[in-house]
Image (cartoon, rainbow, N blue to C red; front, top):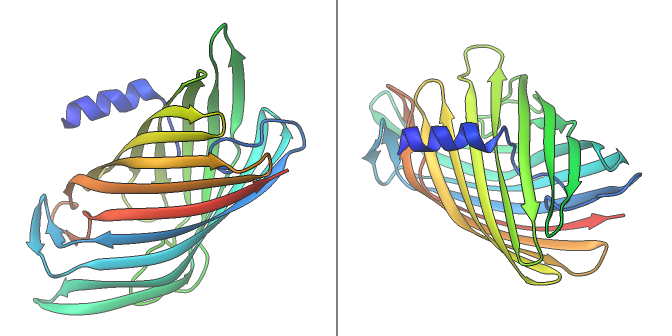
Length: 266
């Protein structure tokens, strides 16, 4: 499975997480927009390697993602993403005993410069995207950190194509950080059905791996709805089906995530 996913990652291109607005807009010169996502994450059990060490040591995170985009022309844009942790709590295993740790506040700012190449074929349209990214640490440290609190950089290359009824996208990103934090590779493949002119159902598959052994595979559905030309809505759910922690480290890896958002584009 790991070899297959890694091969899929290489074939799929270098991708990043979802981009404003809803991965859809704007597609015109001088466009801009912003979106807000509420996200709740429940990670069940504390992992040691690929086994659950303690089933009753869980992690819960509630946060809001604030994101924006501006396009100089349809092929060049700047995006910004800033998470705000409303409440985070995890039960950890430290020095042989259970310890409750908490976090809240501003996360790390991610800036990206996606460069897009659009194409129009007989029965489908699509685009290739390449983007450098930078992670800027913000906020103060708490008992533990949902954010990395480190400077980081990444490269991104993605591909997507769409017909009247179907949608496909794939990609992979590679992040490197300062200090001793492991590098990260993230791959994504999304398949969608345009069941209405203004609505789409997707099945999303994401694979994440780090240089020190942490990895997980998550799958789940998403719903995109265009209320009108300016207002866009998206719902997501994913569940981690395979997971393992870094070598010799206790970590919360498994669980599920629900994400609800609204975006506005002009």
